[in-house]
Image (cartoon, rainbow over all chains, first blue to last red; front, side, top):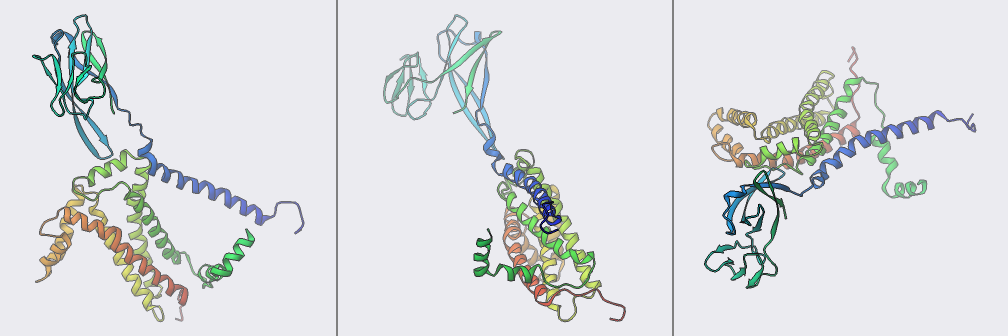
Length: 161
Length: 218
């Protein structure tokens, strides 16, 4: 009987234990791994269309500041970030919207109507009404948002980072 | 595989460990004698799930509650890990207590096993301590008031009572200091004590063997 090619009882028990053990092990291990890596699996791209109100409320060809806040949730922590954008109503039913963050070191620029420039107080960065650099250290023009106007309401496409 | 095992066994004495720990002779006993193994298993389970919980839990009044909400709703299988830890805690107190009752009713605490009994008493008290300190950690209303009452009880002792209460709380009131010290006791002091006591407990069990079921003529 010992030399028989049939499956021995001992070997059968061994393989059944191995199979069941693997299944049970999987049921324990997989949730454990999922638990540890789950925060990494959540996409961090926060994007949204943010309505800035009716376009007709913005004066034509005059940069107008609009402020808003976005709440970011990381685990149990909530962070509220504030943002500012300059809206320029182009009068043709379209608008250009600039981020008021200087492209040099992220200070906030202000529109100076007398000089017709966006001025950054930190290092004298200057941008013309189209957002192009006209003076100071900024390496590139002001960031522009993608816009859309639906039923007269202006929205910008906000992408985090 | 066979060669590797022989190589390791020659140096580590694996077969000897196996024979003394797992293959030792035991008298014919009943299922009540498995409660000790069940307690050990539950302790290991609580230790593992507890270690997993510390990955996200924050022992501060500002974040304790929110971090547990995050474990329950934000983390994959967080509900499972915390659920096992929560119910395992209750089960462990019950199992350890029944293990004590079994030892008592079967007279296993007698000569030569007095020290096994005494370390077991230590383990029972540590288990209750784990339950007491762990109860505060969710930092919800129930946890807060249960600990308020629980720390007030030793305060009724004459003379030194209020002093004991303020030692437990780390001040006159229940605060973030209480939460921090309960957390510390829950994850370091008591587990260290339990591991030490389990070591002695197990050594004695292996050295002395387990008692047999008492017979009428005993």
